[in-house]
Image (cartoon, rainbow, N blue to C red; front, side):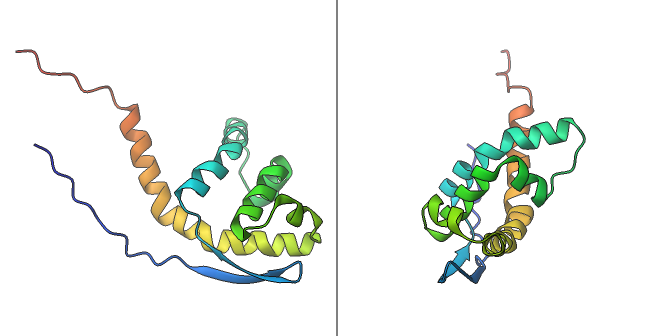
Length: 132
């Protein structure tokens, strides 16, 4: 019988207050549904850039996936995509900066290692029952 130790995260999600479009927003770490739903549009771009040996930067991300970046920002502040589209570019970039400030360390330090562990497990040969 196998038992798994359930570990509670001691991570307290950071938040950043930011103003855009005359409103104040608090940007926090995305939850699971937001993360999985928002990352999907970026995977193809990540794969294309990686295959071509090009480093992923925020500038390339915005240039290659503008609609996905707009959707990500809208989700982060709870406003429709149209709200983001109407913002001046400097305010949109301020939102993006706040989003990256709150989410990147958490994903880099906590989500990515777990994701890589899961990917590694799925790449291992399937366990076979012992022949008796």
